[in-house]
Length: 207
View 1: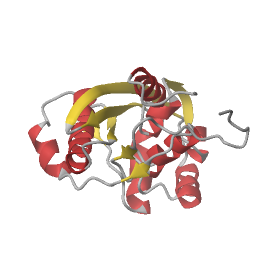
View 2: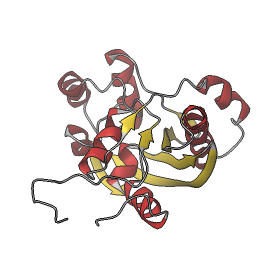
View 3: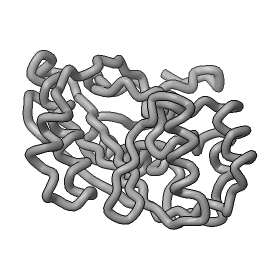
């Protein structure tokens, strides 16, 4: 059966579940045309973070992504479950989601004129078992921002739920002098490697 130009979705060979409440990850999968459901994992991330604190951030994000996916996969064994996690690091300091505008301003003042890193991990589970996992790191440098620029940005975008206190998919991209790596990874998920894995596993395809 031929597909019309209006039909821009890709129906997977098995149900796909995104085990994340991240709007950015959801948006990226939607932009790629993937049909999926969202079930937010109830994993205790703080407990896991304490156990893996000695690992490099690039490994920590995989552990957290797998923990989220495993919880959802246990209850949905026949589905393909995608888990993801992200950490924003300035040197050895983690910058968490600020939660309010005041902390967002503080985070951006720390990042101003500095190099920092976004670490993003993603995995695929089926039947409570990891069948693929991957992490990627992007180096970024922010412009030397004035306090007024920072305050104006926070007022415009309210990035209180974003790692690093910026939304790279919209106005946040204007904050940077350079970015070495994928914009998808900065947004919280290495999308192209994930799509490649789904294709190799014969879960998606343009047929």
